[in-house]
Amino acid sequence: MKSIIIAFILLAPLWVKAQIKSGPMLGYSDMKEVLIWVQTEKPADVSIQYWEKGDKIIHKTDPVHTAKAHAYIARIIADEVTMGKKYEYEVVVNGKKIAFDYPLEFQTQELWQYRKDPPAFSFIFGTCNYVNDETSDRPGRPYGGADEAYAAMYSKKPDFMLWGGDNFYYREPDYTRTGMIYRNDHARSVKSIQPLLANVHHYAIWDDHDYGPNDADRSFPLKHTSLEMFKMYWGNPNYVFPNEGITGKFQWADVEFFLMDDRWNKAPNELNDPNKDYWGQKQMTWLLDALISSKASFKIIVNGGQVISPAKIFENMANYEGERNYLLKEIKNRKIPGVLFLSGDRHITNLNKLEREGTYPLYDLTVSPMTAGKADAVKQDYNATLVEGTLVQERAFSKIEVAGPLKDRTITITIFNVKGEALWTKEIKSSQLK
Image 1 (cartoon, rainbow, N blue to C red):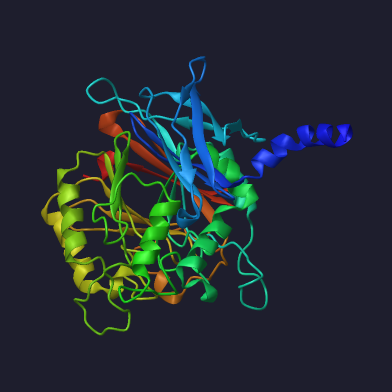
Image 2: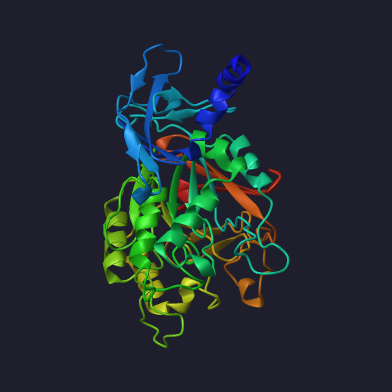
């Protein structure tokens, strides 16, 4: 009996850790609060203890009870923080600290406005993340792979990660609330991604595969359940239309990110009408209003599909020419500086540049896929907007760095393969987007 008790004591930390199904994951970071996401295996009380690096004062959150109705997820706000600081933290489940074999750190954003130049920062951007699952994948060669990409992304030490859609893939058995919870759980609990989740802040949009089936549009009957899942599993700071999709916005230093929803209002691809909805009038009006009022050095519009390429293929916005033409016209007419796009979907990576008479060019960086199957570019991709030397037809992700004084900020884009090896680099200055 004594040996059994000793063995139980020795194994206790492992038993406690087993109560964590996935996470912790860092959500948004602001100046006065940070969101931390944790999922447990069964009902539990979860809290966070945190302290500023180099300080001994420990702050504790109130416990959050996890329940089956919400997939045993705790969304915890750390609100006793100071601006522009880095913190270490611990996860406490049912009063016991959880042991991890990697560090747990988060940060708050800095108050730089009217005081100094904005801080330099970096983020990872990628799309199309497929996690294999023998129980429901199609027969044949697995579609996903290369999860060494997660460690490569983590090694780049970004401030945050921006997930650009198809962040996981719903399968045929998943179109119930139970199935959607299963698919989110399955993708989120991959062991190799946990250090990245725990130490890098995360923001996201969706595209068709993490909204519904392939090419899903506004007619998808489970769209409200998809929205519930997105809000449960991601940590975005806001939703512009609370019950109508995932549209939102956040700021990091002097850069603003406009998170677009290309599914909720989108008309079917098959509808033969050049003026059919893509984002929809309500979302378009919000975007243009938000852009014109923005003072950001760079205004980054994040969308599931390509916007700038004129190729009318797959689900590029060019297939919705009425909205695309209106968007491009209004950006010019309203004299909005600093606009560029991030997109995914295509399972290729490239940079498109649209020259515009009388104003600056518009760039669209497409980065795809991370771990899903790669594809080949098609003939229409080789059009006048394709920037020479930027087409990549293998799994990849990007690190985007922003640096320099406020009046001369520079974005540096580097594309990496899944091993973390650089494939190409491109600089864009804010002075070139005016």
